[in-house]
Length: 300
Image (cartoon, rainbow, N blue to C red; front, side, top):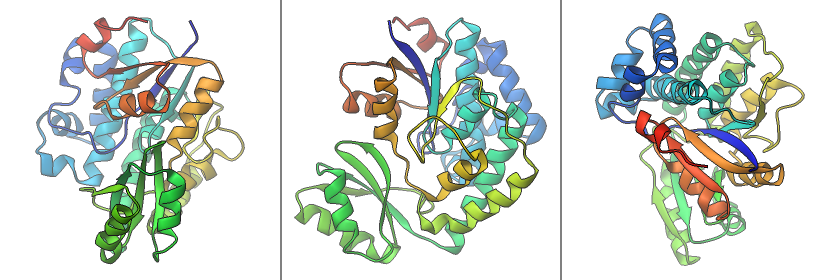
């Protein structure tokens, strides 16, 4: 058997009740929720009982999904399943930072709370739109983006799916251009144009916040969304850049496989990353874990 990777889910799959079963079944998971509540009162209640509208607000989504992600990862470790490396999609990378011990759980949680606040503010001050593009290559998407002002590929999810950030004014015209090129574009129900220059102020604010945050060397190899390679160099610069730079998910998965990973376990909310992994490489195993039953069902 090859290496195991934990992959931490990102914003978009949140739902009311997320993590409740693990909270009730796993002491390790419960400890994460208790930590979150001690820093940000009501986080567990939001995860378990929050309305869709409440959970979709970036200031709530990011701390709640972080908590569910990290709780699932620790529940797996509690059962004796440990990864050789980790990666996180967008905000999932902050949970991966905590798991790899680059930050304490509390420091990472405080960081993700600040990140959510800053990104929410940037989205309000500099509004934009996002669209998922399917059926055409990333290179074709880049060519179409070049035809529009302030339009950027931001999530390289798989060979056949790229997410784009643009202005609200350009959104419909961009989708029409994708259709003319033989692709399909779907506008996403998001509150901002994330992982693009629209988030420049949020990135600057996060850099300022991190001046008082100390990062440790990772105890588990962690791949960066920005470089698609293991973290090295200026860790704070990578965390800052991640807010305003594309997520190179396809390349991360390809690099992990090249480095010996043949089993991916998505920890946290939903199964989006599990699906992307299978589209990127059909030969690897991919599982999702967000409930005790998911853990019991794991077979490598």
